Length: 171
Length: 171
DNA sequence: TCAAAATAGGACCATGCGAGTCCTATTTGG
DNA sequence: CCAAATAGGACTCGCATGGTCCTATTTTGA
Image (cartoon, rainbow over all chains, first blue to last red; front, side, top):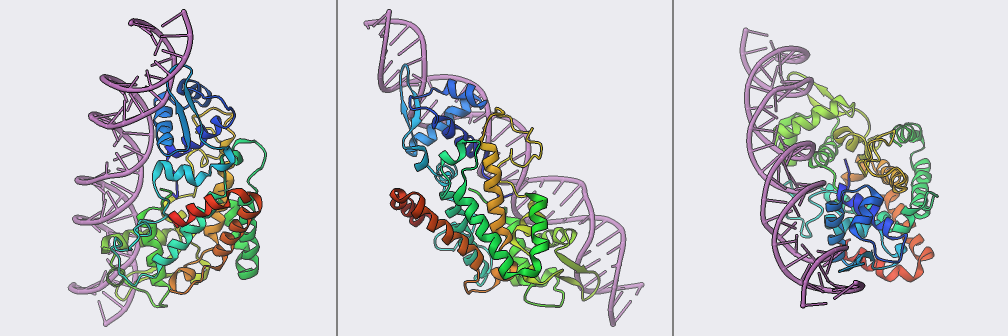
């Protein structure tokens, strides 16, 4: 379903929560604040610490805080931290392309890689600070969205109706 | 890993294969041509038939063919057919938003939905005919990609280095 | 110096879902 | 009537995701 893992979702929520304060916050505090079970909060933050996205402070009055400003941490980075390299298809992830059991002449593979890069680029654009507010801050992404929509009309004018109908249905 | 399922990948490969001919092709033929095991080919095509993406012809000399021209079938459509509605996070998929176990004030949810729509819009843009050739046909997507890249420079000039470095690393 | 409050780092389980196979109808053409 | 196809499920198997828990280690303050 083109889905990110639950833990990654938690990572975004937790990073967003951490972006609200400068001082370290403990696992217990974050669990209370977000509704995520404490052991899970701990697990996610330990991973993010290893990846250098948050920094930890042990001992009394310790806790976690962001290693960088919130607008310097992208969604893509969080996904990579929790789940490993982003790759939409399985065969697109191997550098040599040898892992693909399908026939070698499947030209589909190269194009998947491009799709991959595009999705990744979009997610690189979105920072934790973009996710925090109730306001609409996702300007970069929406700009890409609009560009795609614009293109749709130009390139395939006769399909516009059917496609926008689908966008409406699942949007 | 932000991954689509293997079966969806098969669906794209099979639809691409079907786009090469007008006449129906049998499961056995497609299995040979693509390297996908025959029972799996059958399973995927049965689903695509139910979804109205391909049409089937029973009996001798029967088989499957695309229900529409290849440029009228989007990657997004195939994903939806095999895996159900596209939604990047779990809580984004429930229409009422009640399924999210996290606290109600998590402003993250609304923003996930926007991300969702953007990714979906990008995938709506890509058709089966775009996936077939070895040439670079993915103009719409690459345009979105370029728009995002452009925006990166403008909005956050000081982060350009770090971000492009990441794109290099995982691209 | 000790106790309390934190994180670090795993081990561990379970259960759901993806992937794949196979069996039995049903349709269709010769 | 037979052969060649698809239709529609049922079924199993494997494994990654998710969650929990236990035992160090670090830090602070009384």
